[in-house]
Amino acid sequence: MAATHSEPDSRRRQVLINAVSAAVMAPSSHNTQPWRFRISGGALELHADPRRHLTVIDPDRRQLVQSCGCALFNAEVAVRAMGYVPQVTVLPDPADPDLLAVLRPGEPRPPTDEDRALMRALPLRRTNRRRFQARPVGADEVAALAATAERPGVWLVRLDPEGKRRVAQVIDLADRIQYGDQAFRAELARWLVAAGSRRDDGIPFVEKEYGSSIPFAVMRALRSPDLGADFGRLEEELVRGAPAVLVMGTDGDDARAWLAAGQALEALLLQATARGLSAAFLNQALEIGELRDGVRAVIGHAGHPQMILRLGYPAEPIHHPSPRRDLDDVLRILD
Ligand SMILES: Cc1cc2nc3c(=O)[nH]c(=O)nc-3n(C[C@H](O)[C@H](O)[C@H](O)COP(=O)(O)O)c2cc1C
Image (cartoon, rainbow, N blue to C red):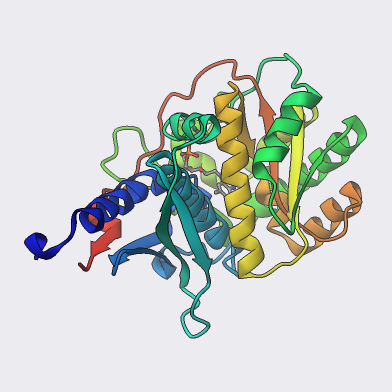
């Protein structure tokens, strides 16, 4: 077959394979990596992988689709960096809700400086749950992040100190509720992995400790009655003291909006990485309906909060980068 392919076709197929290599570096809820890719007819299909659905914390698949949106944005960045304009169609088949997007390399176009900067940041981005430096994050920095993340129907709010204080309280409450729930603990335990494990998904224990003395590394800790309160207190304090806390939200609250939120989130995170900033997520407050309403009330923005992030300049690097699955496990090439 190879001999019958024109040079541009094989080049475009290679572009799409490289795009998948970039896509899989995306963040995902509990590092579930809930995606599958197919290259067929010169197009890259992004499918949700329902076997990797977190049914307890994410019953409506919001975070699953957001995670796939992050992967989609990475693929777009890679296609641009390789000199093509990505053409993306989201949710092309109403009969197949797992087919989230189709991407084709469109017109050739030299990458811009921004395309190159985002591509360089892509393999460097990591969730950093540790305490950040006290160094402030300026309004100009946040404006640059917002500009990169901008897309229709997605909005971003930076919390003022009073907003941080109130959202931090909601996060503390969310931790206490979630860690008091056996089903939540069991689901989390399935996705926490020990250092040195051969697993290629899940969150290394030591990263979930946040550089604190709360011993997530010990499975026993997940059964401790104090864990929710300890963890809640720690996160409340980290949020109150964070140099910047951002809430990203969307006008709608369906798969289309969640994909867009994922794309915007990854754009923001790559721009942050390019500027030397790190981010950690605090989505527990959005995983419980009434608490999500509480966050909505604090920020006073119409629509649906999708993500809570704290940002700052890292004080220390992460110790165990989260693993990733091999391309062979996630990609099928049909032509
Ligand atoms: C939609 C989404 C929600 C997330 N929510 C949380 C969260 O609430 N708490 C947390 O510690 N990490 C959260 N994460 C971060 C993931 O755990 C992290 O991306 C994953 O473990 C892979 O690690 P990496 O980001 O360092 O590559 C979230 C990531 C995504 C994409």
